[in-house]
Image 1 (cartoon, rainbow, N blue to C red):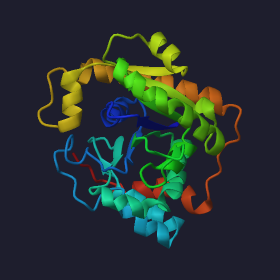
Image 2: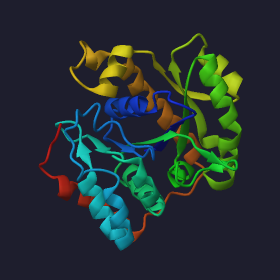
Image 3: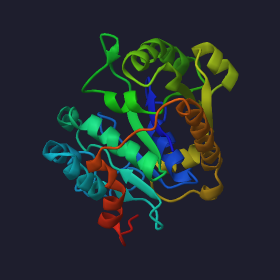
Image 4: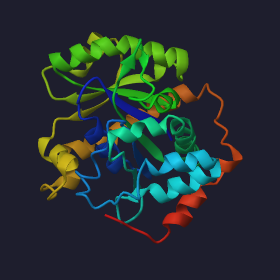
Length: 289
């Protein structure tokens, strides 16, 4: 299964979209909330029910011990979002000041996420937040650059409005160059279109010279629930956002599969190869949410 990183030029619903894709996937799925500016799902959708012992920051200290310690810490840092245990979340930072401690953690975390995708058939989504550039490259502190470089698909999330397309247009070139020089290639870049605005998918693709790999409808009620939590809206399970998100995950997987056919399979390090078993042992019998 693919590892998909979602990014934006400015606030375009990256977290809400990533959460919708994770919840709607037909397969087991995981969302890693890796925005250096801080995570919002803990306080929003989950209503503050997740304590600080869960989440991304717990991995920084473990990584300094070694891959095996990171694997154990990763399993313990996840929060299960459904009773069946099929939807898992790595909650994000509670304080943006913590981002500077993660520079060494990103590459190791990327390996773990790819192990889950390749060995356990997880749909893995990364909320990489708003892109930050420095001298034409991804900022090493304000962006989780290694996660973006190693992703099977990088989705620039845009709305169908002039403002969103203008902001995205200035980032497409540097991001494409970044993926060519330091990532898995410029063909990993695509657009996730939020259908809020007058433009159709083909117009957006033409304007940004980048394919629209998937689209999500403008569904304010469901989006608000996924953003701030509270009471589930009526018809939530059949909402347009979740129905289209389910289709979107299939489209994203198909695009990634076409590209990966010509690549050599990833080889997990021995220390990380057992991360799936450790996750199951660490979380066995525990359900949350």
